Length: 431
Image (cartoon, rainbow, N blue to C red; front, side):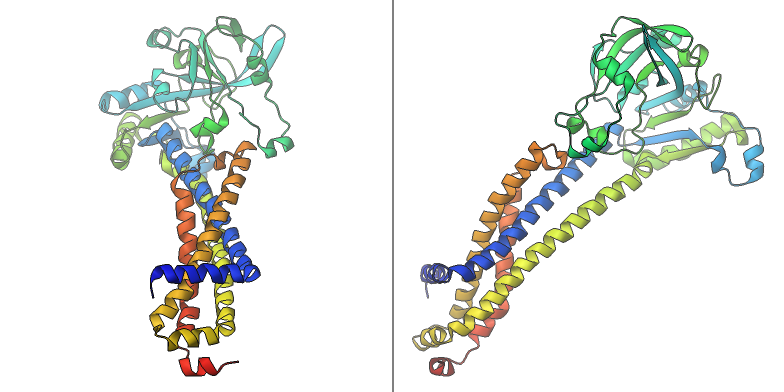
């Protein structure tokens, strides 16, 4: 038989059994909607995770002092320990000038005052290297420069949060509001003199974050905490009064980026050796691959992706089972038809192709309907602020329809073979 004739008969069969066809059509549509949602979510998560790693730095290493509770023995907890210093970061940069970034930092909690407004805020002492990674900001004014660091200038840069373009639903249950951010959003601080701790500091710049939906750093929470006020690291060491883990010349850590993930292990060993040569055994520190810091978060994201993928697969398989059941039922209502067609020259392959074409057409029509409904649902979720639904790509509808057609094909193999094996003489006698 010609394929055009097989296709015509398949369409007539689908039209002639509307309810049976609708049930198969509907079950496939539900599966395709789930596939569309799954593909969009997985694509979005992978894309945002990749961007988060790129912004953080592909060869990122964190050098941090080992906390007292991380000590492996009571003696180790009690012994005198040396601290990381700004000089250590300079020594690392001098020893390995090819490193893309060597960014030391020192954190403090201090009292922020401007007029009648007062609040305790986190302040980080940094160098110019800080802006080489994680830079997602729009700068008003200027950033901290080498002159500020060399002369321990009393200047600062304030970070203004980007908020949300459209608040997600869970924000309704999260009522906390950052007093400093509220003040920054309603006040022009650029050029003003504010009070940090016991000293006066001039605000030389304001860093404006993008909205959370467009901020790749917001996707991964681990290691992404940042203070809201930046000062030169030398200023933080000499003048900034407040609460912090390390006093005097000590710093909290050094962020390093080798520029290439392949060189991370090499520089971890070399930086460890360099620090031990400077401090001996009295400096207890950890050197962590940034990917290890993100590991738990990445594992959680992958679990979410896997869960959604399994749900999508189950849904599309349910549609396939529906098509199989309907096809098997159709065989018994069309036994005489099969006998007549065999008696006038149709071969077993023709019978198989007929049933498989009908099932694949059901899969195709169900796939198209599912894509339309899925697209509308995804657009609605994106409009409602679900940032994971904002990345629908052109290939996803094609993949979803292809999956539906393949499901129809796979589900029809057994019923088609069963129909093709019927004895034509017995089929003609069937009443």
